[in-house]
Image 1 (cartoon, one colour):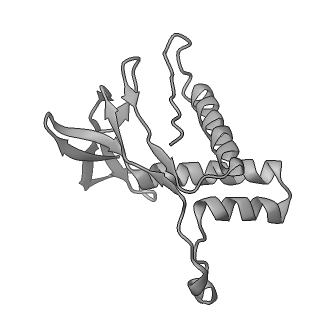
Image 2 (cartoon, helix red, strand yellow):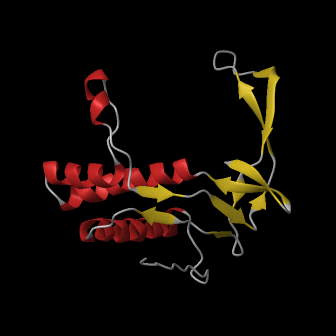
Length: 159
């Protein structure tokens, strides 16, 4: 979790790279489920670009066509948690390893707006993106036990 300055002070944000990484991992699973090996890899790499695995692939890198902006988390529940490092051998605490962190929790009023842009969209890319958004919503609903009365909404713009 990172934060940035705004008119109202420091606000928590989800970084674009974190969101893109989560989208990338889920999209690979969806592509592998729908298509056989090479076709899934081609669709995935065309949309998300190529990663450099070794020296021999350096000249073949390609940028992602999916752009993800950082998302401000509006009206979160922020709590400070104090923690201590535990020595795994003595099971005692390190006196100099005390620290506090401030995670962000969602409430019924918490809002996160995610902006995703797809450059040079093709029909198959849009289909994968829609399946990706559907999968992320259903995973969040299950994992985080979202309240049935919470309002979830989305808006897609074709430009």
